[in-house]
Image 1 (cartoon, rainbow, N blue to C red):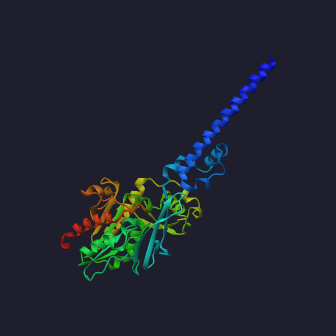
Image 2: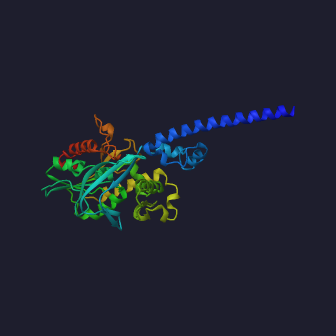
Image 3: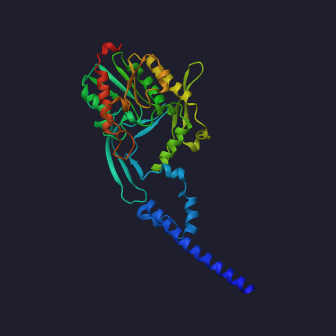
Length: 369
């Protein structure tokens, strides 16, 4: 009887071992197939062995089953190179462009791939930090365009920005593209005040606005985390900058402070929660209203991202003229990008925005006062 039980136990153990062997073989095959798909031809360099009993814990620890990363991970890895420094530090703005001509290279390759694809664009900054928009002979009206990378034309050539296209259509004016990548309404406010003494009544001020800029107005912690993650994805060291932050207090007074951009150097600022959305919107609106109040020239808000019902319009003064340039304002598609190398809007978008501005500025200046 005891011998029979021993045989039964031995048989059961053999069955279990065989089952585990086939389970291991299947799991290893499935895991290797997953790695082959995920990492292309270099999949054998990304795991320590072919055995799932080792690989599964290893990959679990290093992100294979991290669904939050998988949901946001791009098919490609990206790089951006301008061949040298394009910006310099500025005590008020955080940073500003250096005058000169640059060849900016956008690169991408599949994760684990060896061959980079490249896209190159020409970017020219004038000595005053404005982006080149072509020649003009006008001694009359200047059009000052403030904004961020969308407005500045990140990823497109000088001759493809909507500011350049506007300049070509209106030789009787001089278009000054003051926009800079990464800027927000707070920087526009600072730039405007630096230029205010030279802006005349017959000039025009255009402020680029998308609803995502409200975070930048107050340097929201989530914005700095976003910047940190961008540098990490690019494989570049995060820059040490003091970014301007607007504060609009209960007395209606605007003040500007500065926050260190680097999350590892701003005493846990990046770990804080963002201010309420309403507070950020009100602060943005206060900056825009103050520009309109103090400007001798008419002020337009170029609204290119968000909704027609964005809450900011409930806080803006009547002195701010609105140019709605959302996708629903056009009867054709305007949403392109930088050929898949970057998600900023491309030349079709810039062309559409230029048509909107040409149409708006066709109204005689006398009727704007």
